[in-house]
Image (cartoon, rainbow, N blue to C red):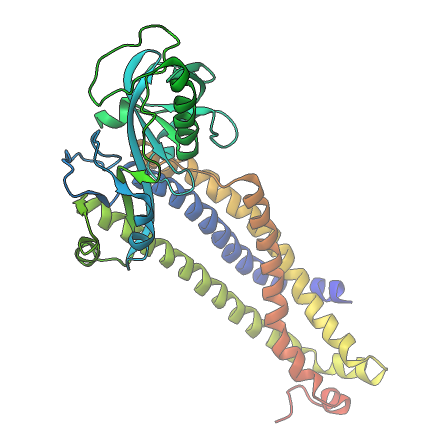
Length: 416
């Protein structure tokens, strides 16, 4: 009966479906485009480095356009300082790094240890990488270093495979370094201590150009202190004020604060506000659709008072009458949701082939969500569109439920 009611007033059903289709399609396209652009912009801003870097007070820091790391240094901080630093109001993320001079394939080089769970500067520059997460047997090479994926390198005599390559950043210490996880660095130090005791290896001092006596020599810092870091890279929350964060961090013992580019920090914070605005716009749009559906079905139910009264008089139960009304609404808006899904997909393809190329030229990749996210978004879109119809028709259906059959039959308008 609900399906038959849809075909009785086709023009009205088509106009309602078109309104829902446009709203749902724009909402779906806004969500996916917002996701893609936010991911791309987050990657672009992450490539610009940290907002603030916390180092040991005596460390000399060369300011670059992007705070991706610090200059090679022996000065370190306790790793447990990450807890009080992360507790400072306005600090969103804390990424520790440790710079260690070692030998790679017999040549002096710097290794930067990082925490993949906290990092927001190293992995954002990955151009080529193997599948899966980076492990303790993997190394990442900087943009100016040689080596292909899967190639084996000897770090302190221990073989490690190249997991990925970074793009060129223009920051010398970053482009000319190798990158390991903190766990991989701990394994490397343990290897140095074990084999160094047998081979009589000597540590490599910073800046040393000495080469090992033979290919198997283990020239590494076996006395490397654990639980120490060279720097903490900080990313601020959208509502944070840089001056207040710096003042709070300066109160921690032995810490020196290096500030990044304020323009980049302000732009990243403004991006978060923009994305929140897009989400609010979509919510208001869906609310307007809900009001439209509710008004239209109030008129539809009022038009069918006599019909509903006859159904009630013939023995139809209250829940059956409501099911017919709500079913009609769900059919119209559900089908409109499917059409809106197609419309949203067309808008996304148009956007990706126009503005998407423009953003890509600006260095902001249009990063599509994963297939799982896209499928989930499509299912939610159709479900929400059908739910809009059901919710919108609930009020008029509930009102007619309270009216007596004889009132519905003898009245074209609801009783007061």
